[in-house]
Figure 1 (cartoon, rainbow, N blue to C red):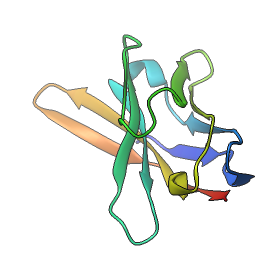
Figure 2: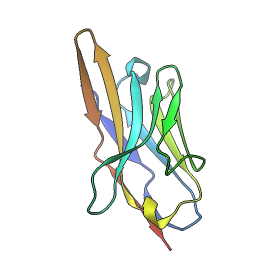
Figure 3: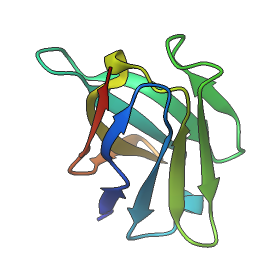
Figure 4: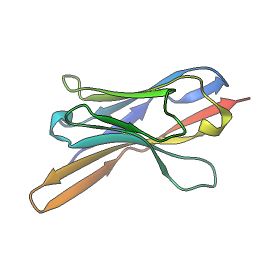
Length: 119
């Protein structure tokens, strides 16, 4: 069983920066894909960024050039550096891990951390 705990959310003015952290209870080197999702108020959860075990990254168009996802396998941490924040980035941000095993896979989610960007 994998547990994910996010931290680093808060209130920031537009144009500011925040860094989110996701601490995993297990070794993240065994997790095939880790990522960040967000759920804006009144909207569905959406993908923000992913990073696979090889270090390849992918981003939603809305955050490309502003957000950076990274992972520290030695510390079992995944980060989301968010720069040039906009009010539309306001959301609850969730850490996600995908673990593939022969014939099956597992999804794990953190409890979420609130990010609020004021205009």
